[in-house]
Length: 315
Image 1 (cartoon, rainbow, N blue to C red):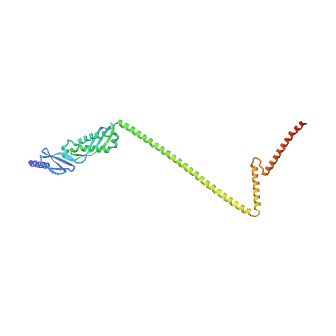
Image 2 (cartoon, rainbow, N blue to C red):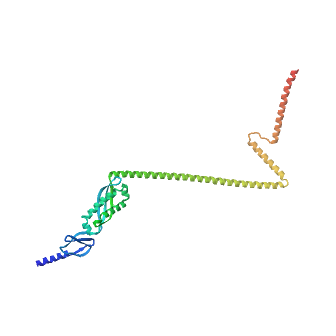
Image 3 (cartoon, helix red, strand yellow):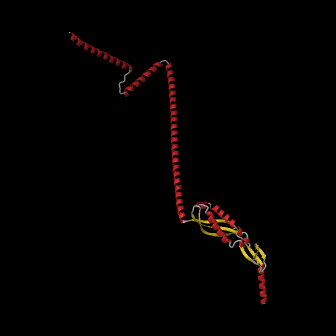
């Protein structure tokens, strides 16, 4: 019974060594007597017991490796601390097993050195603004160097770019100055826009006033013209009526009477409002006559008085 049990366990052990099931997400590297034989893909396989063995197992899924932070110097001599993530995948199980001792560690170290080299080609501002192109450059360089390792570097992502404290303080001052500059520019533009709006308003106000004055003068001219036209028409009608009245018997006498009445009325108004003596023309002639007579009388008197002393002397 004991012997049967030993034989049964031996058979089970042989079957275990004979059969191999490779999971879907892996590839197995098989060695025969210490020498590479083949790479088994996912599925069921048979092995030669005590001759074939599984030397390496590789995960064929995409792997992500953390790249530790490291100190880098940019093109403008700025010290930065950069870390990232590298994504890779095993493409050839044989090269991944025999091409390098540890492809994960090698990929991380290569990513660090390549990242340091690429950042040295860029300035501080470019490292922030051109992160995508920096990632592409690192992937291209790592993939070229890792080709003999049987792996494929799919992408690289920079997680953090941290300048030194002194650089951060300087950048904060620069950002504050830039914000102050933008604020001053904004205020200047606002003042400029306000002045432009005020000048436009004053200009429009002047235009409106001038248009109003123009329209006022036009309206006044039109009103004056209409007034003159109405007065002229009225005078024309009046003259026509006067002509008709003069054509009637007795019209001239009526006209003379009307003119005399108007003359007397106007003379009365003038005498009432004037501060000087105003007399009719006939009275003015009489006044001139009497003044002339007075001048003649005074001249005759002067002549007579002059002649009398002369006669007495002669006696």
